[in-house]
Image (cartoon, rainbow, N blue to C red; front, top):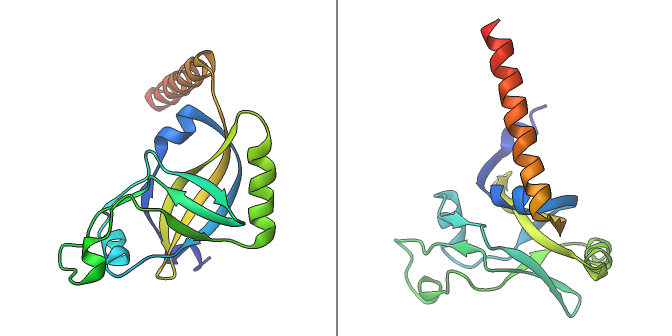
Length: 155
C-alpha cells in the first residue's frame, strides 16, 4: 500500500496505446549521465517516438528526448538530448523481448517514464501496430463509454 506512494509518473506515451496494441510490459532502469536525472525530475522528457532496440544482448532506448538540465556544467552538459540510453534489464527479460520482436509486426515501445524510490524507470511494452479500422473502433468505444458515463451522471 505505501509502495505506490513512492511512484511519480514523469512522462507517458499516450499515443502508443492509440497506435499499437500493447502486450506484455516490462520495467527497466535507465543508465543516465550527470544532469539527466535532474532534468527527468523537472519533467523535461518526451517519449513520443521512443522505442527499444536489442544489440549484442543489451537493450537500448532510442529517440527518447530528455532535455538538457539548465544548471549542468562540464561534459554532461553538452550531451545529446536524443542519445541512445542503455536499459537495465535481466537477461531473461531481454530474451523475452527478442522473442517478441522476432514475430512479424511486433516492436517494443516506451510507454511510461517514472520515478520509483528516487530512481528513473521506464515501462516498455511489446506492441503490434493497429490498422486504421482498429483505431476507429477504439475511438468509437471511447466515445460510447463517455456517453454512457454522461447519461449515468445526469440521472
